Image 1 (cartoon, rainbow, N blue to C red):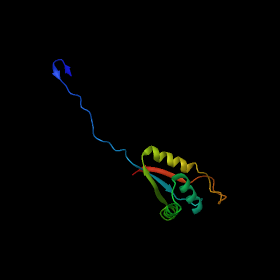
Image 2: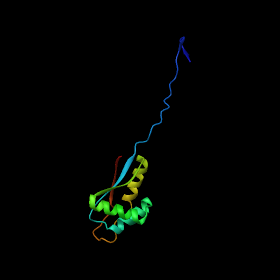
Image 3: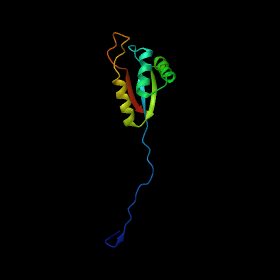
Image 4: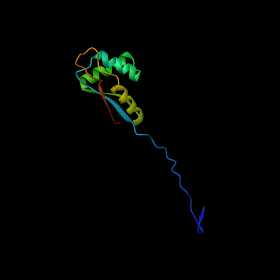
Length: 105
């Protein structure tokens, strides 16, 4: 390209950019049973019975568990699916779903 007799060259950034990962984190509460947590994780995340049980144990003991690390958009979708799962029918006082958050990995 020539601008007023001066040669210029367009520079294109060809570096690969990675999408920053996000964690989907399930938070503990006293209004949901292990059975509920396992059912929800199997339905929303497609986890095996064993893996879902391990997450249920972890959220109960550590008060949180990282369920998935993925793109922000996918993490937001999974968080909303957890929130839409509904109350635990085994506990009468339970009024809604468990809480999940997303955070940078």
